[in-house]
Image 1 (cartoon, rainbow, N blue to C red):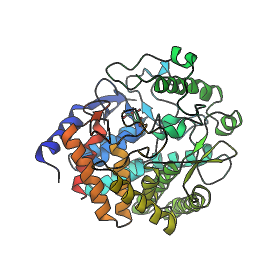
Image 2: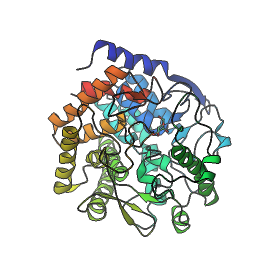
Image 3: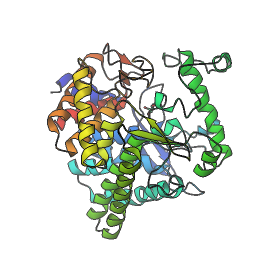
Image 4: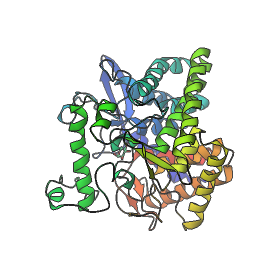
Length: 425
Ligand code: GLC
């Protein structure tokens, strides 16, 4: 399914984006998402890089995961958190209260990635080395991001979702609809050089609001309850909680491999509790995210339900509904795989950043979730459509589902996931 040329392109991009660095006297290697625009290391990107690299260079795949835990927060209330960005060159201070990393996180997929790398390139010692960091990360989630004890975790910033500018965050960011005030436009940051991401005033205003939100987080010491009480961004998203479920199951499997049976049982209990909470609170006639401490349901569209398959947490009815949602999305679109925001939904904008585009990592997650449920034909269809798009538009960051045009940065590392999609076909 994948041509020799596309395979070679994936390898070229992953090798070309490789960075070597040192931290606390030790050498590390990681892959930046894309030259110029994304020079730092991002948490979930690196997990996807490792998943692809397992087929090309397994030593590098393990190194990528070692690098991702190198900047884990060691002290303070957020000890155990894996930062969503690591600044290996030490210039995080302009934006963050740290020199080498950010103070928020991203979708937890490190255990999933480690388990998948281990399947192709078994390395028990590497798993044993990573395990304490992965366990500390999940202890952190429980300690800091479920202040109400719902067995569901909350996000405090849209960047934590990975889907920065999704219309799902408009209301919790205080933007209802596409209305932008003159003030928002005036205070908008200049459009990112070399991209058209923020050419739209609404997108630009949202970005300004995301930057301002960082100050609120810092002022409240990143405390979820205090931020919820202050009416700041506080969202419990379906797909994110399902990804946490997937990571808990992978962590349980890793603990078993390391003969840590009591730990494995603990992670499985957390998975079962979270799955029950997802089914009780986030499922309904339609699926919802929850907003704020009073857990106001907000309908969600797009690929989130399909992505949630990866957590094996939806129960029989929810699983059937999620599989059906993929089938109907593929039937409705001529050639595109899944979009993060549905073409039929309000505010669908196929060329605007995160407002209705094809994102390779989301399609990979949905594909992997379908495989876990034995839905191989549908998983293969997603893989084929994603590969076809990348074959014609190149390794771009994301794609317009209507025209097939590649958007965002060029030579984007996570798009090499098409190699994994083809090889697990
Ligand atoms: C953008 C994406 C985020 C990703 C980063 C690097 O910020 O929204 O999900 O991790 O780019 O690719």
